[in-house]
Image (cartoon, rainbow, N blue to C red; front, side, top):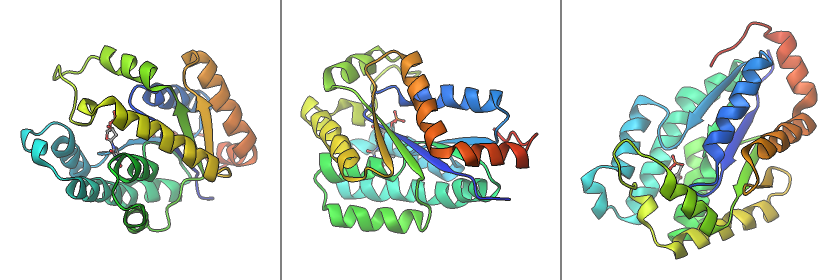
Length: 228
Ligand code: TMP
């Protein structure tokens, strides 16, 4: 069986990536393609505990940027080895709602931690597991913030990262755009301000261009292989 392929979704809070991950998953299901969806931080029992600590635990108010960086990497390292790599080996498409580019952007660019340290820790956390394609949904900071504030959370209040000032999110947006400009082969920047339908259509087109032959092969090899 051939290795599956690995697609990561990135962007600022409120960019619409989680909606698009769900829509793409629904399409893959209709096409009878084997896939798996992950999210970060989290996605494993260990990772979900780390997620809670990073986002909602009262103690996290005292968290230092270096600690935050290491916790994101710890969660990712577990997810990569426990879930992503085995799924790719089974021939699944993996759709990841965030991966190492989030750390490059949030901890490296927005929190101003040393980019070389961030790059080395990213590499240590994921080993050889590199995304085949990364989709960044690009939205201006005002739109992203308006969408973020409309979100209803079960706990009723914004998480720790969502309480950052607007300048933080300006650095996040700028860093994602720069990443797309530098890593042209892997990364596609998509305008996230359009309707969810339009974005879904564009993402499907990008996938078709990039993976047409692999998708046909996966269908042939695993006709009943829906794994998620
Ligand atoms: P989300 O589940 O709504 O995308 O929230 C995840 C939050 O964690 C979001 O504020 C971005 C942040 N984050 C980082 O700062 N660094 C990382 O490496 C990851 C994966 C997420």
